[in-house]
Image (cartoon, rainbow, N blue to C red):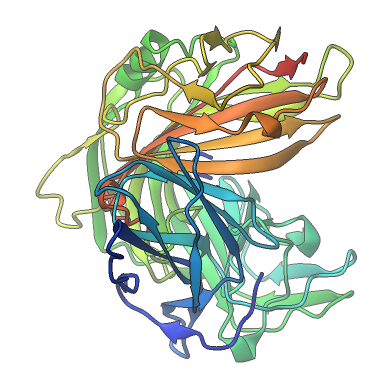
Amino acid sequence: MRGLLTVLALAGCRQVFGLEPPMLAEPDAGGTAVSGRYMLRYLYNNAAHEPIVDEAPIEFTATVKLDDGTNPPVTLLGNGDFEFTTPTPGEHYRVLLEASGYTPLEVDHTASTLALFEMRAGRLGGTVAASNTQLAYQLSDVITGGSLQLFTTGSFMTTTRPSDPAPVFDWPALTTLNGLQPTLVEAQAHDRIYLLYLTPQAGVSTLERYRADDIDVANGVQTVVTGPTLPIEKPACVDARVMAATEVQRLDAAGYSSPTTPWQVTTGALVYPTLAIGFQNGALAMLRNLDPPQDMRLSTFVGSPVPGTLLQYLTIVRSYSIRAGSAGTPIGVMIGTAHYIGVDSTCSTSPLLGGEVEPPGVPRIDDMRLEVDRDITIDRSRDLTVSWPPLVSGSLERTRIELYEVGDGALRPLRQFLTTSDHILVDNTLLQTGKYYVLRIGNATGWTGAQRGDFGAFTAPFANAVRLSAVFRVTN
């Protein structure tokens, strides 16, 4: 189960177990110094197969724009550090960071220090899997019913399907947590492959049996694994009041009732290696579909062989298609919310799951609502204001805005924006005459340092609320 919707191998990496603050710059006599750091934060396994976080610098360029339109110079200090000066303390600025292999990142803020990261679940390097690479299991167990998940660490890939005692996995078709191409797992790099079997009982599927293999997946051929699975111990009690029906009502009140495709509501428990790299996906320990959505208390015992943080989740998503014009090839997208809480394995509390994050309202460019597909005419004399006024209140610590060009059957990312404000300014030259675009607005909690400029501090509980604009075409 995926949460809602986000390689440069360089020398000089250093291990970190917390946020290392950016190098502080001395203020110039004529202004206030702003210092920042832009790094790649990634994940790998140690010899005990435990997740380890490390960082590497990114080669990038940086530009700054102030509200008066001026561009103060930016000094790149090496090792990911940069600095610039604003005329007054707390002045609003926009920093644009551009690096090969990454979507340009623009940060809208007033903080005197910035900590910015590209997050990657997976080690650096790795061999991209050839098209005919496969992993096949021939298990001595007879496992029927329920579902299975393949989950790897080190390279961090996953897929789910109905249970099968002899599954065959096409390696290039796996989903990577970091959004890159699937790579081979390597035993010498301490990668591990988990095959997880979930069995339904009284409407709840829990992880019951598994395999954990430290093997190399050979490139271009089929690698075969034989043998039995092992039973799961279940020492952790997951217990929460799942507010699925309440959350659907909130989303309908926030204007999420269109499109009219059904809500897909799922709750469960999963293990994620570490929240130091944000969150992308995890290894399932428990799963329940809630159709129709209902508020309920869900309590059960679970276990998992995968090391990491055990989380209980609730996802409420609606899938639909968008396209560039009436003749374009459809592109599948999702909107909705995802909610995650840590697990008190003693079941001494029953926390609420759902209902806290603020859903974005209908996106706008200046005063133009992007609720239905439309043509727009923009003001080419200035920056454009993008906003998403909420209809339903809630908690909010960070908003990520992504601008995509809508092509024939594919979305092309143009720029991502980070802010703690309720709007951003966008360079009008990003929007070209005659082309189609869509905005993705993601409100989030859990980013506890965002207000002070630290976009690397992330912790549970956390939640995301995602909304897309309608597709719009620029006419001028």
